[in-house]
Length: 104
Image (cartoon, rainbow, N blue to C red; front, side, top):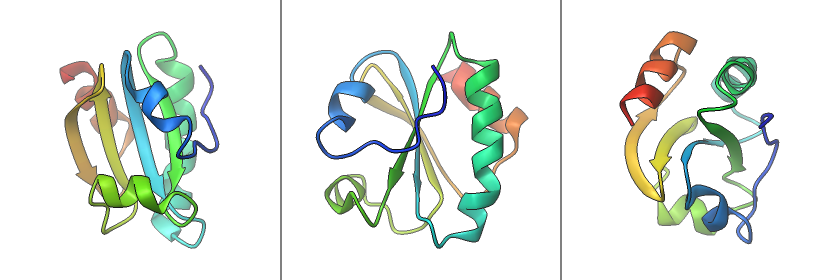
């Protein structure tokens, strides 16, 4: 699956419920979030059979951000069948993200 530009309150729960999903909690005004975007695009392309990569704008989907206690962006959460397996804050490289997904 290609990198999903935006997921909202209505679709979030259904998407993270099954399989491995990396959620990028970010904001348009966040510099590190913009730097992370091409890394996530590449990750989504390289691991399309393994992981779904989605983006949640914390300004537009505040209820999801509050539910997962997002206080800094970017925050990345990896879900496996609806369960949080990993949570990392800040800019990460491609290799680190691949390792976290493989561990999930």
